[in-house]
Length: 142
Image 1 (tube, helix red, strand yellow):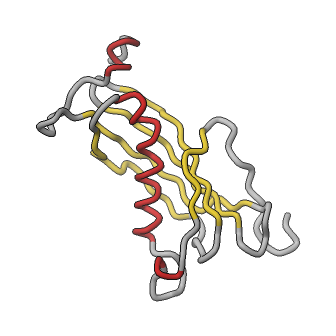
Image 2: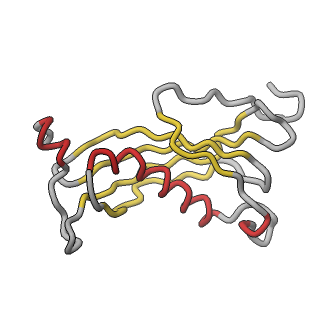
């Protein structure tokens, strides 16, 4: 447990890839002075799209936010580390889990899991219609 906090430090995931690091700024706060949830959601969507982009090999779009849990507030100056892993590859869709850890400005080296989410992306063609995921065809994934 950190001497600066009543929460135990979180372990960073070893089964996910670090896909994004970002620092929220004062302009990203809500009326309470914490970082606005919509800003965090946008960062999660960006991070969540990194791994599916490799598989989709072309255009894709977020089709669903299946689950989104805010565990702790995000504060100005936190260093956010966003980790992702692909959990399912369908014929046209890819589902990803994202975990967000905050390294508090005043407690460098201690991490707190602040958010976790599951999102689904769909590969789309130039007209915006779903198209097969190339990797899914190669792997014979349903």
